[in-house]
Image (tube, rainbow, N blue to C red; front, side, top):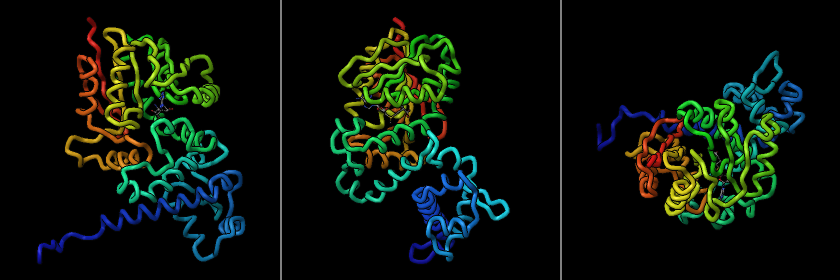
Length: 339
Ligand SMILES: C[S@@+](CC[C@H](N)C(=O)[O-])C[C@H]1O[C@@H](n2cnc3c(N)ncnc32)[C@H](O)[C@@H]1O
């Protein structure tokens, strides 16, 4: 140790962070080219890729092979084709395409300094009222957002179907349930459930499309409304999935009260979000996603399970427990007393 410097500490972690950034910029450029769609239609050699996209000879081979080593392209006999991961999520001909959703994150993260200096979102959302209504987005961007939700909540929905005991629940309402992806997981795993998505009126169009894609037309209900101004449907269970983190603390308290009012005695509110740990250090993705919420929303952030529990006990819930759900998601189970 010299002058407080520990010579055994190497720069490797920092260099790895830089390499992760290089990889991500490489993937985003491939998305910008729509490379995975073109190669999905017809695998091609490196010279053919160069010619097709007007790329220079110098970097193209390593560009393609960096995508191979990142698990997004396969190379067989010198021809490049998307892996199953890229074919499912980065081919713009598919309903599950995430390219535009991921590109939107790039634009707002380029403005993290502005976000931190001003505390204001950096995606064009100026006011709470404009956050989800599409006022600040074009139709394609708005649709890409709802498609992106499916990728984020698919694993959460599958886990929610398993982690919680649904046997005593009949009516479940997924509040802010978007395209019905989570309700689809619930009704498939528990056919006795009557599931309803409660979301803003324009969302019904993308909900209907998704139910057709999943072969679940008529199986999940849709109730159009505004969760701040309209009552929630009477339910035995309400789900708030990746919803509370979109809003400031006062709005979260309102939603907890709305849930309490909608539930029968003995009912349950199920809340999942990418929650942060009490010490604010051991879940780095959650802290970064919290910054992402700052860049996306006027008041949103991630929160700890204890903070979340407080809003629900203040609203009248009897008990709140937290359990790990999947990936970085934590589930709060808030129970209304049976009496
Ligand atoms: C971040 S998405 C979460 C989607 C889904 N629950 C999930 O787990 O991914 C937030 C959802 O809340 C809906 N939403 C936002 N404001 C709303 C409001 N005032 N009333 C009803 N739904 C609203 C949005 O349309 C969107 O579907």
